[in-house]
Image (tube, rainbow, N blue to C red; front, side, top):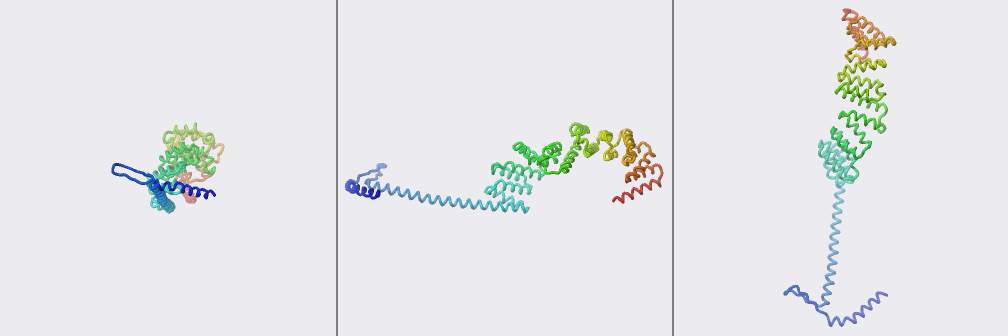
Length: 396
């Protein structure tokens, strides 16, 4: 109904104003300068404006079509590059696993930026560069990995440290790990990596401190943990022994736990350190103190490795213990060796014969034969030498 009304009104307006417009068309003059002028009627001018308007609309439509085709083309090209990058990333990973590090590095470095996980691709490229021995390029890839994705600094940093450790760049690894530790304090993986770095750098005190702090997070059995800790202390004792005997003694007396000072393995480790550092006076004093507290046959064996300056004191201590345990072969053997330099050959022979009777040993046979040979008792000496050789051969 509304359309009909509009059409009727338009017809009426045409009938009323049509004759007027046809008789009075109007006049328009456009002058740009004294030579260029344009003249036309108002009706023609309106028609020109309408035509120009529709031409502009058509031109806009054409431009939109062209631009839409360009964006589709760009999108297609972009998708093609992305798919190619993902394919190269996969091929690069396979090449890395196959040991073809040169090809892996080439594929991974080119595809990293457009891959689904740029950080992981850059890390793989860094591994390939390390296998090629190019540590500078490895570090560049790892920097790009850090910058390629947010929130991956810790992961990339840990891989960086592992690669530096693998390349035996322990000082650089320690610097990298210290930076991570300051940014991510208390992280378990960081603490465990310290355990891989400190031994090559001979930082045994720090190694032991981290080992104790992280005990509950380490997947060691009690026996494994104890063995690792003992090994660390053995290295620490010997390291301090290169400085002085006092340094070892200070650690033992003032910075060692009570249980450690009573543990036989740690006592032997201290003696080994004193002997390795040629601190024989400290070793002798330590040995006599421990034997005085409790006679230990494993510790008594160290008497052969130490040039005892005060043999009489140790002899009295051992003779006192021999009265309590007269059938102890180790004490008899130790007394024989201590009395050997005192020209008490008869006592030496008695102790060695008793030691052989209780517990035959090649060392006792050899020493007894030597003493008897010194006394010109060659037949008996040869007899003990022969028995010692037979014992040695039977033990093999």
